[in-house]
Length: 240
Image 1 (cartoon, one colour):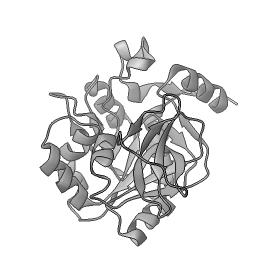
Image 2 (cartoon, one colour):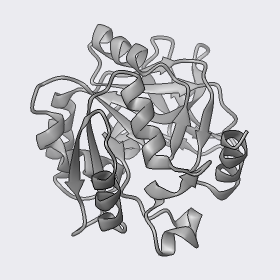
Image 3 (cartoon, helix red, strand yellow):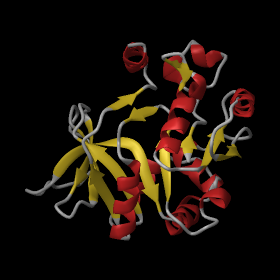
């Protein structure tokens, strides 16, 4: 699933008249770059959620001939955030009882996604988050067993949970915006939150002690193109 419904407020003025997903990166819409990267890595069934200027995304998909089955999860009536968007798309995601990949539309990376999927299957995790050593003040706190233990903003010292106590073997790594989820975990999301909007990271951090949330580390290039400065950097890279 590609999460592509966001308002893209950081990318104004483009997003005043276009969806964030169609912001060009080196002349190619970011959504197209993510779709082609997924296809290259062996994913042939893709779900895309839509809300902001949704008709433009639908028209874009009609004009393209991707070598994959693509479904649209429509959120035009209500923007559901990252967690609610996954719950809303469960009829597509959970119909074969297989784990599925979730990928933010504004992330470009060289990560090995099949390795991530294999790590998830082998560990029998409820969800597996792709993490790396990356320059960011916001870190996931990962125990010696590679399971999620919390979150910290290293700039302010704020943590989740508020009562978090560090252990000697804890690691502090950055979340990539890419993760794998098992279908039964979506049912838990539905039971906890219903069909209302909620961020997926809130779900992970609120229920990490009840779930097996694996953090899978890789070393890879990563650009968050949802911000003006990093979008400019990506445009320079892809114009080389």
